Length: 118
Image (cartoon, rainbow, N blue to C red; front, side):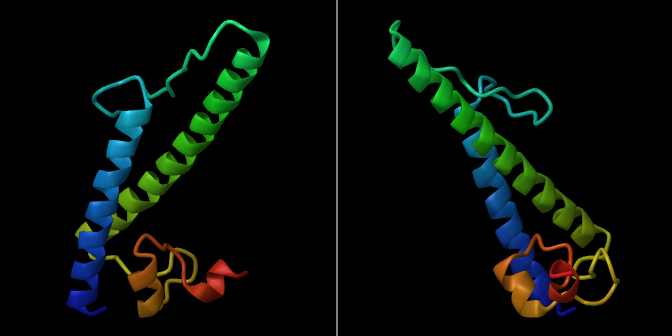
């Protein structure tokens, strides 16, 4: 794997990691992000039943987004760990090189396209 590809991927991963952590801090009750101790904020809209329905729907949306962000963050952290161990760019499933274009587009990819589509 070309070191310039790894360097590009690392920069993008670190940038994305920072953005996701900032998003999670913004949408959760804790100021210092700890992925094991976050909980989406409950937003009080009003006292009417229809207000409560809005509150529940909003809260469910936030929980869903929070889970998606946490999943993305885990993938990014795994890719950064693989970079530090010199294993970046190898498919988790078959051990072959992950396509360069795939890594440039999706640097947290853990599988090659062939294994991804199985």
